[in-house]
Length: 414
Ligand SMILES: [Zn+2]
Image 1 (tube, protein in one colour):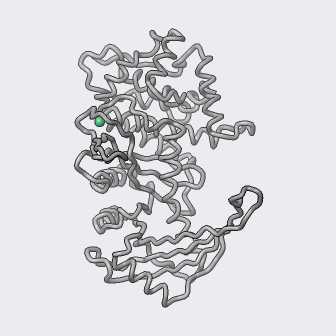
Image 2: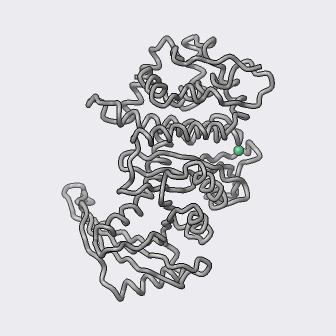
Image 3: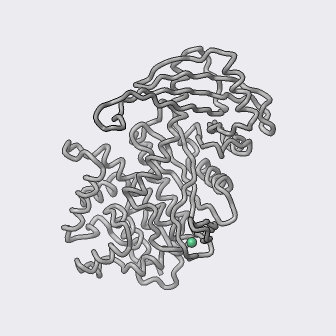
């Protein structure tokens, strides 16, 4: 399976050709950058989880002559060009989109943006570590160091595709970093999406205006109760009847208000969508002997500048609510899954550049892996991702030819 995945990446996405142009800033490098990037990709594909694991694999199987040592990989990662790595992501995306490997989310191309905290440590290891003071249970104070980034994904019905990430630097908040991220994503992927969804933080006129400047619509969660928009939406909900429908097991009561003049600074009309959701559920009772019925309730509010539907049809509204909910994909499929399954929170090399390089390459690998699994695994016995990863790992352990002949390393230009 290991060889199959590498062959697939190379045949469909030309992966090992497009990484050939990546450079770094080492002076007089002995080992070409492409070899280093290829090794990092293999490490991610085979889910090694750390450079230490990889070094054991190299030592045990005597691959020293084939692949660079982990200290070389770490040192080079400090200066590998991030723009060139991002271009690899763009090429993979272009190919996937052209070959219809990606699907729209409920009929729309939807981008989701959010921030994620990567790792915490008691030691400051680089000038870009963010810090915070934490009070322990016994009242003492600790300083905690951590790294954060914002990510931008393309939501989809089966898989989500991670487009780009941007570090959150010390002294700045998530929004400053996400401006840079959204600007770049809109420039690099101009036609990839029409709507961008963010959580409550993104309910800012600057975010809405920035996206409008790129001809994108925005959706943001409304949860600040002090806000005039929130109060106005609640007042309007009391006055009008909701649309009521059922989808799967959940019962929805949804209002769609057009609000004007309640958002200083934005000045245009916005839609506020209010959704009250109730899902009956059968759960184990507390004594563990029988079942009881419970109703899970959730209330959601979103603000958006999406145009109002032309018809009074409930289907349009149903779809909009589904699109608003697709924001969860970034939490589930991007952050939780890559952290739990792919070890995305591990710091392979602690420097500002290397952290981003390893993450960008990891996300490229995860994107390819997801597409590979969806389109190329016909064997019904391979039911879960974890099992497929184990198969790839097993193939990696038994292979004799780590970097197959498909990978032709070009001579170092001098
Ligand atoms: Zn750091």
